[in-house]
Length: 98
Image (cartoon, rainbow, N blue to C red):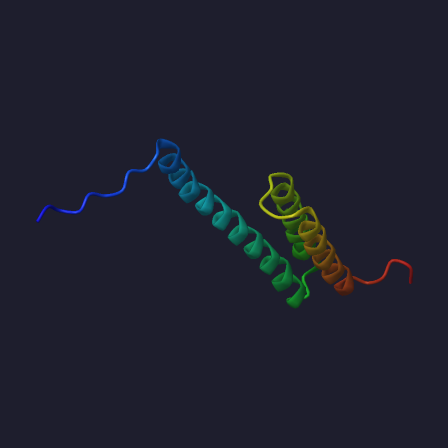
């Protein structure tokens, strides 16, 4: 009995599969970085460290905006994340109106 022959794949299908692997890795890497930066902000707020919270927030906002600009996350998702992180840091800081 002859061995089974693998089905033929078009060149474009092979290339798309290759691209898919690379893009999946890039997406995972970027999303993990966003989570890490968000956790840094949350940790700084939990430790009541205003300076590190501000700097961590600045880094996180920059990364989230870049992610939205490059299509890793949706624009509304980026806005929501920035808003929540900013609100978290502002809740820790003393009110400037008072």
